[in-house]
Structures are given as C-alpha cells and as structure tokens.
Length: 125
Image 1 (cartoon, rainbow, N blue to C red):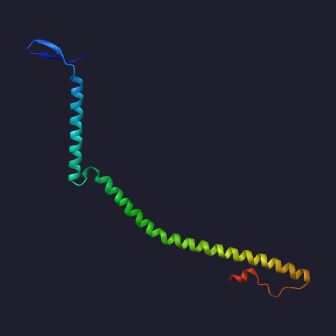
Image 2 (image 1 turned 180 degrees about the horizontal axis):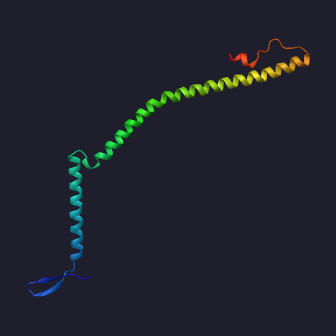
Image 3 (image 1 turned 90 degrees about the vertical axis):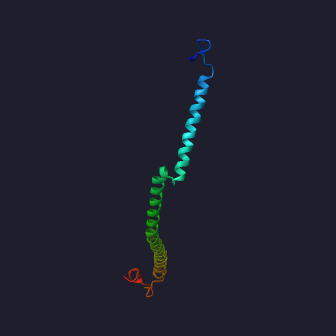
C-alpha cells in the first residue's frame, strides 16, 4: 500500500515515502505519553486504579491473621494431646510387654504373680 500526498507546487500527487513510519512513531509516542500521564495521575491520587485490589488483599490478610491467631492455640493443644497419647501408648506397650514377660517367668516357676497390676487399674479406670 502506497501513500500519496498532493503537492501544490507541482500540482501533482507525490508518493509519501516515510509516512507509514512517521505515523507509527507518532502513534507510539502519543500512546506512551497517555500511559505515563495516567500512571502519574494514578500515583498522585493515591493509587485509585489499583486501590480496590490492594485494599481487598489487605483486608483478606487481616482476616487470615485473625484466623491464625484463633487456630494456633487449638493446634498447640492438639499437639500436646498427641504427645500425651504417644507417651501413654509407649507406657502401655512397656507395661504389656513387661506383664507378659513377668507372667511367663512366674508361670515357668509355677508361682502366681502377686505383684502384677491389671492394666485397667493402672490408668485409673
């Protein structure tokens, strides 16, 4: 596609050789000036264009922090209970292993063991 312009001196149409490039350069220049103008305007008014998303993120962050503050004591309590259950399980395992070992020793000697405590009474049941 060729562009032509009318020359009043020669009263003819002349081919405009650099018109496409000039038009593209001017278009890019005007678009960048508008973009940077809007950017500076947005900054001068306190980020109006992006403030809704920034405010939403800040509010969500605040809510999540509150939820973490509510949940963290519960998690700590659950961790403590899990530790206590693990300790009780290990004691029970030792008691059962020791109880069966003691019973087998007393049974081999033919004596009833008076020292063995039943499992139910050892944990207060």
